[in-house]
Amino acid sequence: MSIGYKAQQEAFDLVLAGVSSTQEGVKPLFELNSYPNPSKHGEEVVFQINSQQTGSGLLQVLDASGKICYQYTVELTDGLQTISVPGAAFPAAAGWYTWR
Image (tube, helix red, strand yellow):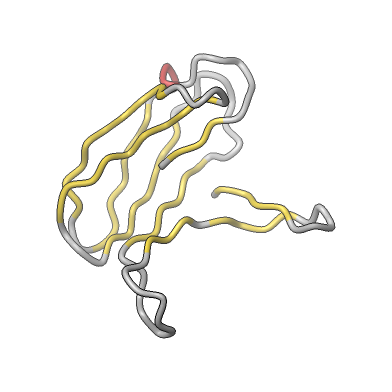
């Protein structure tokens, strides 16, 4: 699970959600989660996508400089899907990686 931090440095689980509207009560189009996070060097990372719609999507993993280390085109289905990213996609032994 991704981790976020509050101003008091208190950790909380972070899930990325895409929405089609700012109206209250509208379900997100998708939720994206990853684990393990943080991961060890060379360790496979699993992304879970829970989509409310179908269609093409693109998952990208970027290093701290913004360079794309890995990308994967996925056909989204309604419901939960998992994508495994090989440890070789994370070339540095340590550091920040982001996904979109």
